[in-house]
Image (cartoon, rainbow, N blue to C red; front, side, top):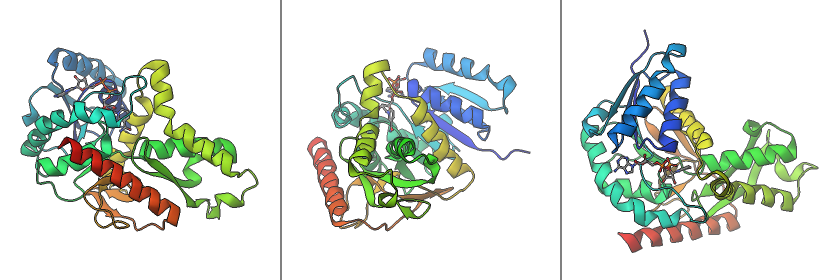
Length: 309
Ligand code: NAD
């Protein structure tokens, strides 16, 4: 018999619906709750998803606007909120999504105080920090998708340069999921061999790969209006790590505690993710320049949050 694994999706727009579909394909979720404010649309998404089930593992799907249905979820995924318009940066979404979070996060906590909460809505790092101010979550219980997507995009670009599978390229983008990220290059390697020692390496082509990864969302939004397949796959990967207690190292966003001197801000740094959410933040080695970049990002995000609260 399958173990019960209940997941709730708050916000069933492009990202929420695509992630729900990705989770169904995986077959691990036994109960899926779709929470949206437009019940007619959420019912439509449920029906469409349900009609894929004859080909898949069965999942009970509930469409609702009532947060009480979240009770008992192992993880609640938050994708509700405004998305970037072409040319808009993620930080400017803070004004639009700050109050929305003040409304929905206490409801999620009240319905399911023990469950994990995965934040996807942008600006994901600041909104992750905001959640801890809105309800008494345990450390690691709430975390953001952070720079998992940026890192995947970076590895994909590096893979084209080095001719190695992205999974074997150990290079991260850290900091903010947004314009204030930075590439962790001082320790980047392929199979333990420093990136810099490969004949394909040049500072310029690695910089170009980083810039392509950083600007990928803006480029896609200009062309088709939104991004959702890659982030849905990120959500599926994180949920799988929770479900299987895989203890995968992922650069998710969590509030920092004296991390290179930084506190009172949520940033993306490599963390161990398992059944209990973020189980550990890794004490990675940063160069002097990378430490300065982390400090700069922390100052920007703390400043943006202080300004709005
Ligand atoms: P969308 O407009 O398609 O969907 C947003 C959904 O939120 C809509 O269905 C809307 O009805 C719903 N919503 C709004 N207020 C709500 C409320 N109070 N309760 C419940 N539902 C509510 O947008 P999208 O493309 O799905 O993007 C959603 C969010 O995800 C955006 O903030 C976007 O920037 C973010 N995003 C994050 C990443 C990442 O890597 N973290 C990647 C892509 C998109």
